[in-house]
Image (cartoon, rainbow, N blue to C red):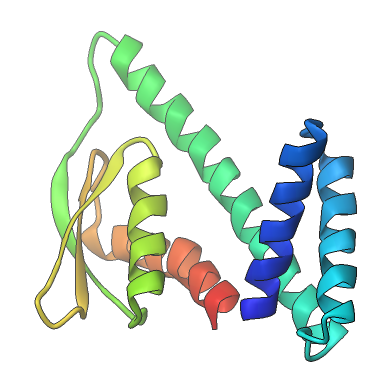
Length: 157
């Protein structure tokens, strides 16, 4: 897992140094980052590293998809004469346990328009999330758990 984060970090550094932020240049950066770490004998196996990099890319693509969908929905409601919001706060039971897992999950939720992470329970088992569109609390929780949390845990574990 650490090697995957380091590889992505080196790829981002490559993009920053070259000044070319294209998917192709990012892919070159991932390849160069992996080779650099392999030469430094810090990568335990190519399959594990590539799997985590792939899961990270999948998480990023899922986030962008959710960002677009929620942005359109919020923009439509803002421009609509009769908004269809049903706001509320839902306690989402967490499978995430580490600070990094909880923080990443909470930030992804907050960065998505229409939702905002409010607090984590003292025992770190529940994340309280405010949503603009909560018609069914169980469905809202299920969407977070099967969407963001599942992907975050796959990347970080």
